[in-house]
Image 1 (cartoon, helix red, strand yellow):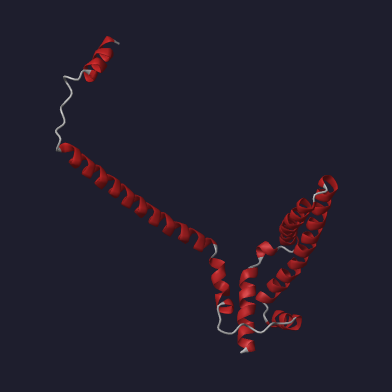
Image 2 (cartoon, helix red, strand yellow):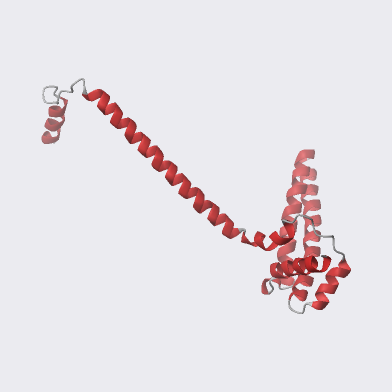
Amino acid sequence: MDLRLGFHLQNLNSSTRPKLKKTTVPITIHLCQRYFRSCYASKLGVMASFWDSYKEFWSERFSFLSNYSNAIQRDRPLHPWTDSDVHQFIALDPVHGPALKSARDAVQFGITGSALGAAFTAGYAWKYSRSLHGAALSFLAGGVFGWTFGHEIANHALQLYRLDTLAAEAKFLEWWKNKSE
């Protein structure tokens, strides 16, 4: 304990500290500026690499959008199709036809779930709060949640997890593009 106290007292003694010359201050400031510039540049480099990895991460997650690019990014939009066109595709394609039919049936589950979720959550919000904006927000949130739950029920009831519905939809769009041109 005494050694530590003596060490601190020795550092506080002004006679043992080195004297700074007047010329060292501008050099010290210049070195500090260079240090901060290099730190700032390295942070920009880190941010650029972070942004690149961020873009790569999300482009992998949304890579399914590239399946629709030939139908979406066109000079002329595709002509609208009817139910008879969809049924014609289902009859022609034995691989993707049943998957497309199941995906179209799953939409009915989603719509039903969305309607029920929106009505019930808005009803509960109105019953207990009598707030119009609360009921409206509950209506919107209940619709989204109901759609999600309805789609999950359809996923299990129709066993959509076994099918590649995305490939079936992309194949249908490709077939429709070839047929309409």
